[in-house]
Image (cartoon, rainbow, N blue to C red):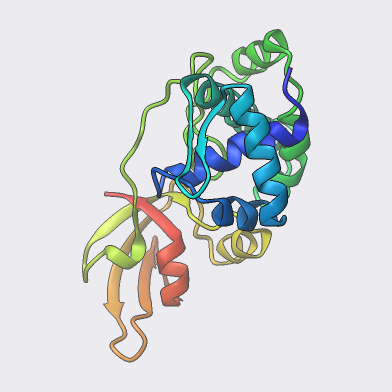
Length: 216
């Protein structure tokens, strides 16, 4: 049995490894808002349990067992987010912190029944794929709106920024999962964009465009 802190580390390492194969101590410290010295101590513990490959100054990678555990945690987190939004009517900007707590309930039977109860959803409310009980999930290629060119279109399918403030902004602008958008103008001065969403034109900043993901 792994502790809550150990599970948080494994999940953080997994997410960081999607961008960098070898994850540094400083990256983990920043992700978990803790000190590098504390990270080093935990990494030694995880290495002793054979959940990570770790050599000082060489970076960190998950072992096969460590990755499996990380994916189980992510599966639970995303299933709970889906449940909270779809069944309890929470908004998508309200559920992350609650799911952070619920993801540590490790009952396999409970998670399997939750999955079945919701008819095996494939994506959470933010568009992130939900792994199955074996850790498998279908990756979908998403690109930021900022990469689209004039007159190109896409369907909003995910976000890079999961902060409540950003999600609340998207709600107000009606830029939600499943909406089709089209780039009708790109402002040369600051590279902000005008999107056509149904019958509405919406002006978004470059930062928003970088954090909003679409499938084309």
